[in-house]
Length: 213
Image 1 (cartoon, rainbow, N blue to C red):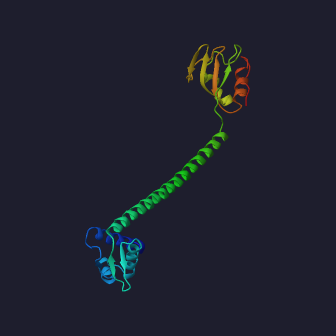
Image 2 (spheres, rainbow, N blue to C red; image 1 turned 135 degrees about the vertical axis):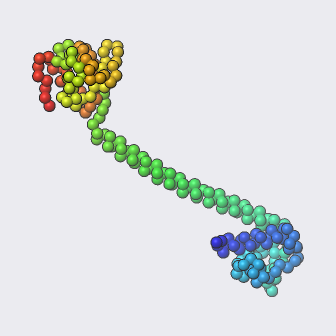
Image 3 (cartoon, rainbow, N blue to C red; image 1 turned 120 degrees about the vertical axis):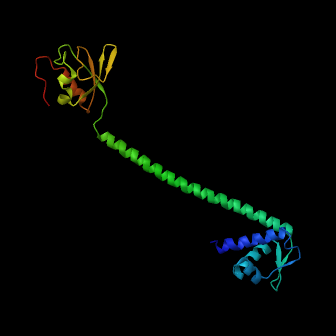
């Protein structure tokens, strides 16, 4: 349902358009408020406000006896044009308000997303880091000639073998049966102390009991 403000403006615009269409001619009297109120199905007060708008724009005049007389078709045109311009500004204002509201919603979602990313990053920092490290296998190492499955590196150090650098070649994700040869560089991932543990384990000479953690 339209507000009373929108209603009397709509009535004023309709009367102005009827004047432009020739339904009401210059110097012709428009029906009284009661009749107009009945025609538009509104209160006489709403009609009074609508007529007041037209009077303020010199579209009509209102006598002491409250008779409404058309005085200018040109001003009726101007009234409608001014209203359309005002409506355009209002519409733009509404669009800006809507866009600002949407922007605030997007900003809030972005802020929440960034917060989640930061929180997730903090959680990752508290997890065991998995930066790869390389440990060279000396010729005297007890793991030389044994397979990855046999040396049980993960059980002894917590390290996981992800690659073996052998000379200029790289074996990615070597299987459990891959054999270790002298001067291989074992690429492993694991905790922050994984380099120390793996180096100690690999450097243990053959025929010596591997250190237990």
